[in-house]
View 1 (cartoon, each protein chain N blue to C red):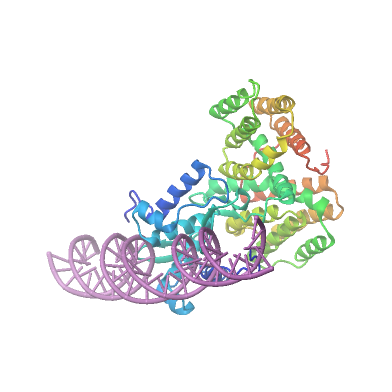
View 2 (cartoon, helix red, strand yellow):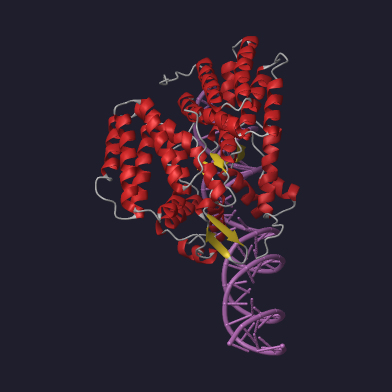
Length: 235
Length: 235
DNA sequence: TGTGCCAGATTTGTCTGATAACCTGACATA
DNA sequence: TATGTCAGGTTATCAGACAAATCTGGCACA
């Protein structure tokens, strides 16, 4: 359990070094960087380390490698957006993540009301239908909840909303599951169903303002139920 | 120019295979997976390929490796959130990204008004001060613009807002630069200064509602200037 | 019985050398 | 000019080895 000054791997150190060098020298996209052999000589390490360092940059989307050609600086647009995780998903990190999710869910509801196509509305209706039967477990309840929100994200026609919200849901799902463990299922089920129903109705009616308001209420309610100290919003 | 069925690297294929296996079998975090030697035998490839595949999973945050111990499934909270890029940052992708940025900037302004500390307000004031002198180049203008928005993100006290907004800005900055190339600098400068001033004043006055409204106007104005067909929002 | 320590086995990190697949540019040829 | 060929350079993969960190079991000792 030696958790002292943890020295990063050799390859990681070289990768960060290369990264700062790439960003600092502002090589235009497409620029070829040194060959592996040159880097071996420059840093005095074996090829395995160099290759692993370059692999890290490639996974981060900073460079692209082509066999026989070399490694090239990638276009900024080709780089994935990456949010480093909090050290631990503790209560504080959860709050912050929920704070980020809040405006996105609200905007997604509004966009969905404006952009949804027939197939999207059908998917939303299907997700709603899962609440007609009484829910039998926390697991199923949370799953149905996530499916509903995912359907809204899809209806925005914006893949970024889909990805961000899916990633956030993935992180906070188990916390929500844990928080709901002590609740009476029937009450939760009824409340969720009613709030989701309002959102669904507004989207189907293509009323963005109502959709945003309904989602805002839903998110605030959910936060309160989990025990989040939600800051008061100005009406 | 052989752009036919581009076969992914061996290591990538094995990495995705392992990933689906990890996610499907739902091994709890901390579970140790096979040793490199076992994988070599199972897949019939060299150790280099296995190591590179595992490196990909490690970079994606799915597993963690410890020398002498093995590779372990990482906790979901430890995984970075990752948004895969659009194939190309064309006009359509830009629109969608701007659509994502919109509610985040607005909410960030509101949160900043509630959460900003003295140092944050000072940084905001410094960013505003850069607009006092007449701007001499598009480059400097855009840089000052980004600095201002970054100061707001920092004032939210929420690292997720900081990261997401920084990443988005990074992607759309060069498009904005290009769009502003044809504008008269003086007009743009005056308009930006005035809008930023309103936002800054609202945050400093700790008025979240006004801050949101000012940022909403600023974002809409920017979108219009770039030529985005902004959808009409319900008041 | 319980605890601390040590030696050996196991596993990942790094090194070295070699071969295969691939790309690029130059050159000869028609 | 256009095209095919070839040589050299570069990355991808393979194979084998040693170093360093970790785990495991047994043993001495209190």
